[in-house]
Image (cartoon, rainbow, N blue to C red; front, side, top):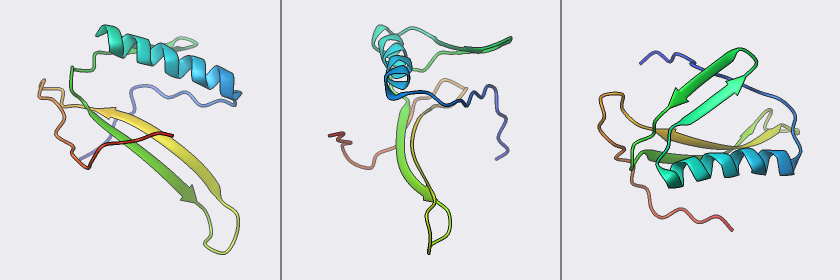
Length: 95
């Protein structure tokens, strides 16, 4: 299935700034509100359903014999037709 990027922003931030963005998204989700992402003249508004699929990945990219790049990715996913997520892989814990 082809992927269309509707919005992308990438910039260096300190941990407190990142936490602030994540708190803003968390508040919107708790309130059941749409999430609007803006950067310069670009923006997109998305309305996650009550039960989207929540995917969390920890990845390492790079050579197996040397240093690489590490990442933590958080993703909410749902069908445009309104059906909600069906991902089930156990209870996530973040410590």
